[in-house]
Length: 248
Image (cartoon, rainbow, N blue to C red; front, side, top):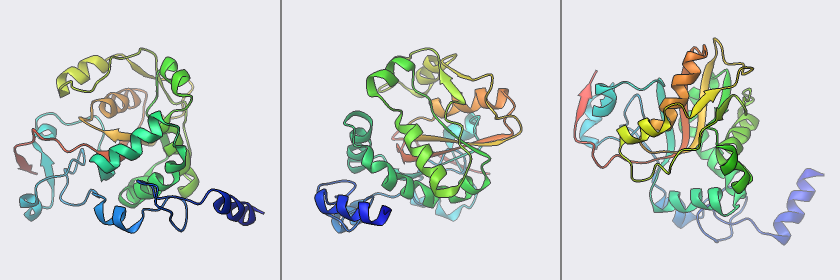
């Protein structure tokens, strides 16, 4: 019945490109022009936070960006599918604020490619939490939707409520790394009944900017007994202030 229902739905509402309104063969695909324009994150990247590095760094095999060299994040490794350019921004903002939850399946498939080693090694997938007030306004947590779909694709266990955001934070956009970290301190906690002890946790989110949110989530998870925390996001903001490399 499922293939028949999918065929009927596609007949009434033909699937469209992840990034535009062009009809495509099946849900979650790019049209050819958008696929060619998509800015996938590829090597070289920082081995810790996954930020794209200049191609001049390609001669090194174990690369770290300057911020990670100066202050190692609480998480071990972060990876992302797309650079957060105008195309990625259009898709993710539509998911977050315009109820375009149909892009979740396609974004999860994109995340699976760079995140496959992290997904296979994870004992539990945990989404970055929303504050209850923001969750009520939005009606869903986009990170949780991505985590659910990734769990379906990979069979990994899911910890939807492992983290909670018990203090609402000010918008982080426009703040530098230090200000973001300060704003997030004490805002996120691990639920007392969360099953994270001795587990390798994969944190799921839509976008990583400075890594401050992922870092705070990883910090409290490690304090709660997690063995290791990695991060997988749909998109990664390239750091325009990055001005150096360190080889380690």
